[in-house]
Image (tube, rainbow over all chains, first blue to last red; front, side, top):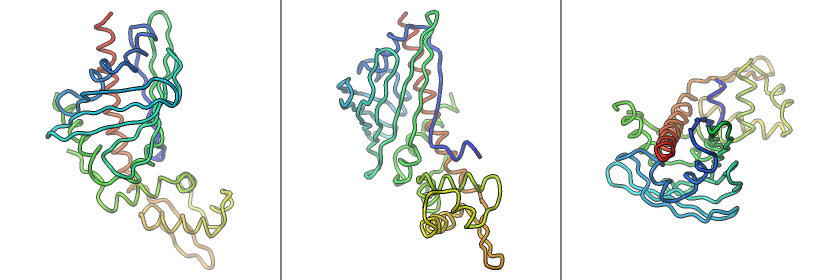
Length: 147
Length: 109
């Protein structure tokens, strides 16, 4: 019950690299398109970003079946290499509202703990009409479960 | 393959997008409440709370019954499963992407 009344996703992963290296991977277009998504199913192909508070970012990509998508937003906090936050606005429903993605990085003994918080999601979904994440992520689950 | 929001489920997402309505659901998670008891928990007028309750009821998230002059509300959590499923899909997206990120950065060492 608790879980289903929240609108925030939190995940944590440990990476054997410096926080600075991880921060670069989070903010460099050429690197972002390599990790953002699922190969062959939901693939980002291009990213542009203006990495400063108030600067815009956009990711374009293709999804299974040949459709295209974009997700865009604006950087809120850029504090290399500890903190990155930005708004998240997908194009797959016309009147979506923004949600907020926040990455916190902490490094100890050469290992970086990367903590992701994606909040405000039910606001996004409240205005969602049928296509988009459901389609993309349904495919994604299918892929994950069969590989 | 997951099936995603059709009409009734969209009503559920609309219902829980509002912080006051999420608060009402949290309150009802622990016990049944009268409309008056619910109103006392929020800095919102009784007519406004009544509107929230009507919306929650039309989404199937609460059930009410009349007892004399008071109306008692209880939670019906079943429709929230759609929300849970959707959040899990987002979790899967991030989990997979962060896994990719880790691999790329560590291969690069």
